[in-house]
Amino acid sequence: MRICMILEGSYPFVYGGVSSWTHQYIQAMKEHEFILWCIGAESAGRDKFKYTLPENVSEVHQVFLDDALRQTTAHKRVRLKQSEVEALHALIAGEKTQWNMLFDMFQERKLSPLSVLMSAQFLDVVKTVCMEKYTYVSFADFFHTVRSMMLPELYLLTGTVPQADLYHATATGYSGILGSLGKWKYDRPFILTEHGIYTREREEELLRAKWVVPSFRNQWIELFYNFSGCAYSHADKVTSLYEAASHMQEELGCAAEKLCVIGNGVHYERFCNIPSREDDGWISIGAVVRIAKIKDIKTMIYAFAELKSRMERKEEQQKVRLFVLGDVDDAEYKEECVNLIEMLQVQDITFTGAVNVVEYMEKFDFTILTSISEAQPLSVLESFAAARPAVVTDVGCCRELIFGRSDDELGQAGFVVPPMNREELANAMERMCEDNLLRISMGKIGQKRVETYYTHEISMDRYRSLYHEFL
Image (cartoon, rainbow, N blue to C red):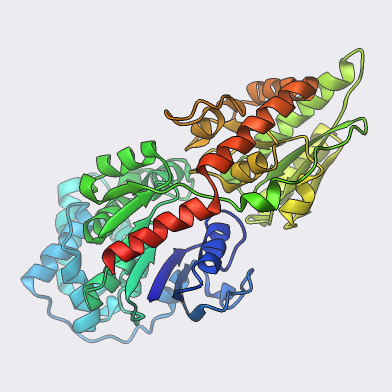
């Protein structure tokens, strides 16, 4: 079977998260041929893969959003059909959009996005929406905002669609649009797997983003909600990693009969025999994270500085150290983290870069995760498989991993703290540091939880069954 895997801002360009899952997924599905349809932000990243692609990857199609800006300004006059004008109006106004009409415009009619965006009819549509929604803002500002939003999106619709037996996207954003386009063009099944709820994640980012003009913040948010509407309506099956995420997908408009939960899984046998750490006078804490703002490394640094200060003030001083394992997603943020460490004058924090997690897990007594947003983090499952308990923030599936699902009576495998709360994080780490028996007990519970519910084999078998259901 030829499966077109549609990826956005992840594999094979960056390490961790969805990329790690994708790499293991393709390796496990040796019986299938994979075509990668990869969406990146900047064309400077073309062919700069962080992974050696498995042998069953036969093609890689790379699309970069900034290439939309390099389209020639030469254009032809176009005359849009009334139905096409209505589809553009709905898209700009944040209303239910006839995506198949847009697909036809740029695939069958082969219209140029620039020609459409420079047409008198498009100008009329923008005027109408501006009068409907933004009476008291500058029309010029609104017009240029809409054009900057529409250009990369419409550009994606003009590309060559790889032919496959099944399309499998990993988000509802741009990748969800391309998955929908593949289904429309070749009438093949489309499966959507959400590791996090993409729409909510983009909404959170946009609410904090400084580059967004406040007047048009909702306009950007509505765009991504429209993207999810496209993906949910075209997908034959929509999977999530845990029950709460599935409920959110339904709230966002996905039909309940399309939904199913398939959790992540890890290679249990790689981690389960890692020995416990011998006492050397140190408590070693591990954080397997990409260096990115959403992972909130700064809160981790502040909390560790507080922990270190507390441990040094105790009558029996306890030495603690922190290893941060992961590739650098955001070089500027990494520099800010390094400057923060210097400002706090905190010692014993090591950034290792991308390393073999299995080898490093031997060094840890427990692990921490301080993310602002997560789905079902593989790093926590790997920590559990190695019998290392975890301190996590209360995001995504993390609470469920620590305490178990409704049918899981194994017990507590770590601590859950509120996101961005330095004091609570330091408190939880302090409890871990002080009680070796507690760490061992929680580690064994986490290991049993992974063995029972979250192995790679369990997860892959469920996806295989899903493929066979449609083919």
